[in-house]
Length: 428
Image (tube, rainbow, N blue to C red; front, side):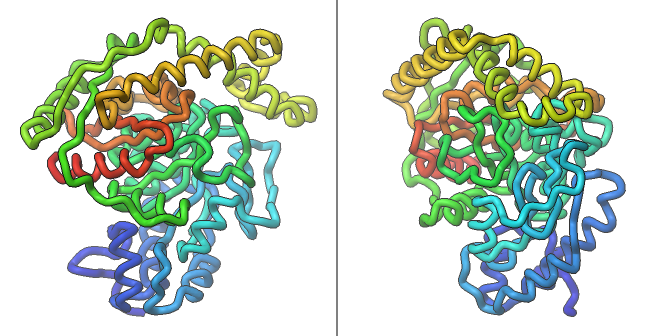
């Protein structure tokens, strides 16, 4: 096998677009790329704990089936899948002892689409139990003493450490964007319902969304196109109109995060972006309360079988949300759903004079310690409203820690959001 390097760099450090194009031009083979990723996993996994399962022999077998010169959009691109996605031939244990040894017969629909586009599944990445809030043993590649975020912790760490160029995650609150921000990579959550969820363990069905973690927005655009059977988005031609959004949670945002966001916006404004302040609709400060009701009620419902079979084997966090959800009446659940729907309708007006909203992804960088996964509230707002959102990595002045700039698009206008983000990263 040839040396696993390209342009004086390891193949495992290449992004999605470069790998697919290199395989198409026969510069290197899918097997060589996979071998480079497996070697990185061998070296780094003992320190990070990003994976709960990986099978090098099976990954190389998959890669051997990718023809040299293949024009598939993700030809030979290795990836990981959060361990709440069914994957044929691999365990799917959902971070829970209750599912120890569980092996589904079929791939989840999103995994199947990616494999059909030429991508090679390396293995399963660590997740909080049932995509909840229980921290995993995964460490943050940027600082192992800090949380990598959650619940897609393994996916974020694996991508940030160049074990794979991209990974699937899920977002019910902030489980894709927050880990992306904490680990210094790109996270993308599409409009609710755009990516298929069949074969994915549900958490709260009104919010559950398949998401993507990668190291560049161009790579996200390529993956999004493959999952949507579409042409990849390109950078918009004209400068976007950016709506700066400061909600009732602005007081939670740290000074370093505020400064990083302001510096980024100033650079974009100098390049032609039009900035304006966007106010939240009336009553927006209650949105997180309504979301909590829906989330707990639906999580408790989807975990009914596990609770009844052996609730004592569930994590404290899973038991707590089940207890809260079981105490919520059907009437209160319906009222909360109606309130969320009203906020979603009101939010449409926020986009009347802008192209995308900009706001912090999280209050600041990853916090020290491993007994938590960070504050989800700045991300979960947009998940609840079914809007597409993404996190772009920024650096804080005087600190070697990444933070995230969150961009939010209009519902169903994911392509426009990606186009604005591609325009922005060329100037940041």
